[in-house]
Length: 109
Ligand SMILES: [Cu+2]
Image (cartoon, rainbow, N blue to C red; front, top):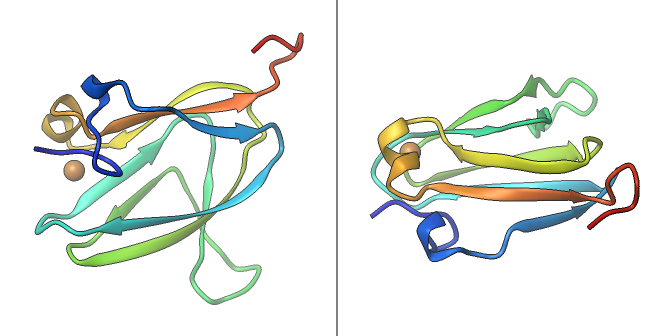
């Protein structure tokens, strides 16, 4: 029932791939009737709030029903990172993905 980009983790979706030190903006769109506290490991997001350099640092962001948040992130931690809803029953139902940041230290894939 719970998914991200229409796929549950059990369906083995493609990870989100980022280049090391890549600067990205992520838009999390909640088209459900519940709030989802979205959490990423290994990184902090900057919440895009329209106040320029005064963007709070977050590793968990509540996305309200029928709403979205924009988040800026620098992928400065190489590795495989969990990105999921922090309501554990949502996560266990599939609302989780992997963010891959490459290259690693030795250039492995
Ligand atoms: Cu959730």
